[in-house]
Image (cartoon, rainbow, N blue to C red):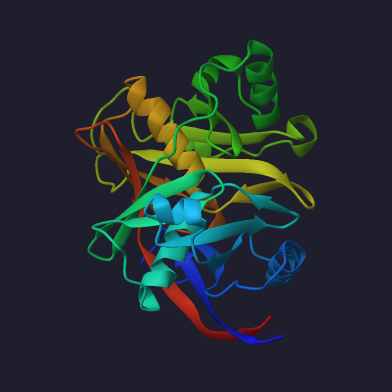
Length: 291
């Protein structure tokens, strides 16, 4: 074992302990996949990342670094909050991008990350699967969420690596009141979005700083789990909602409210059609680990 630089970062928040935490090992060189997985499981966090030099292919594509992303039990090709948290940690540790933007190499290929002051935003990767869900899935999700089928105003596949199924309910209040039934939803990754106001209303909610409330449910170690703030889901939701005319080209989504978090995800589609998924990050632990 050797000492390696390490940070624990809270993502999609500027206030410590109100976002989604991430463990970042800033030098993963020489570690096996099994060692990375073991350390990830030990952290007891939703994800841990390991920073490495880019591969020759990644370097040719302009990558500044390579990252391997692990969650308990498996490696992920891409995830949103680990992308922003890792980039924050890399820059804070003295990383200097080769170009205007940071380019991260990961399982889905190169991911571009832009800087807007202290806020970072990644370019949403292409959807692997899109389009409406099967009606049987929609009815199953409605039963599992405890809502009437007609309360699901819209639905779509939101698969950009993680296999999300997205459904839109009619109000943020309905999203916040959900008590999902894990026995019915077993095996499904579900993202639920509810507009602040009425479906199809463009613009901010009166008196609030967000236009949508988002929740993410997925199979966990002890049944159904809920993610505090989910970059990959919000990226896929934005591609679906903006593309379908259900959301404006720029908005802020809230997530983690029922978990006493205050996640804020900033969405923007630029002139060339790229959707950027951004948020603040803050370092909560800065030190070294033996690995």
